[in-house]
Length: 187
Length: 189
Image (cartoon, rainbow over all chains, first blue to last red; front, side, top):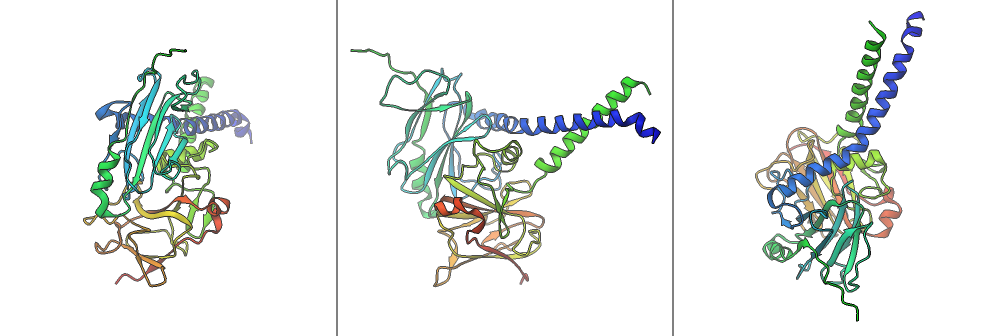
């Protein structure tokens, strides 16, 4: 057992290092994956603009496990680049299941709303950082994100292949762009 | 060997071991996984949630990025058939059952790389609206490498994801006891 007396402290050091590296790598994976995904998605049109992807096929390689029964519209956002706030809105969404979801930089789904929640209407909200002052314009719905970067994703169901062209056309009215609050003029 | 060399060697071994454990437990995993089992299907109610733990969040980031939280969608993934055998495109399967309690559902096949499996006819999935039914509303779908089947896969390991959009509250209350479709391996004809 003399050999073990000589190496035990190095074995312990290796095991402690392994534990720390495992924890660190697991903790870093979501942020790293999100950085790569946002980079891919923003490479064509940049941040703070909505891109409407065609129906997913086996050639769709931007994001794992896409659903071929949905149409995806994505707005990779960077609130620092947008000047602090982002305006997200839809118009004339199709009469089928659809949802709007927000993901923060850690990949957490921090908000989701679907067509039933919208009572057949659309969505219209301002996205801002959670540590910024409240929106002065109380007519606007304000949603908050803990991280300046993330993704807004709109999923629209293709309930029938014969409706694909109409559904695709309708969801393309969804948009996002930097928002500048109107100058406040108290009376 | 000097003490410094031994310390550096121990640290290097620790780094390799730590990354290997991450690779085996998180990166190389099959599908979205989960801690709840219902027949061949597995799920987690914490998918997409801010309450998700580090390991589950990392698994979802790698194998199911941008998954919605349980209030919007619940995802079940199967990597085996109902008898516990690993799904393999070299075999032929039938998925059979009745509509699960949800507004809308779909079943999609994915390769071991987590992407849709190439096939000439675009037969990637079946859904509530597209699946074949008998007179009683029960459905049945075929899965194999044959181009005419409802879902066409390639030889090798694959997984199935069952998406329940706007599931009934009963699903989130007891996700292990939902009447989900069975996956049977059958003789290829």
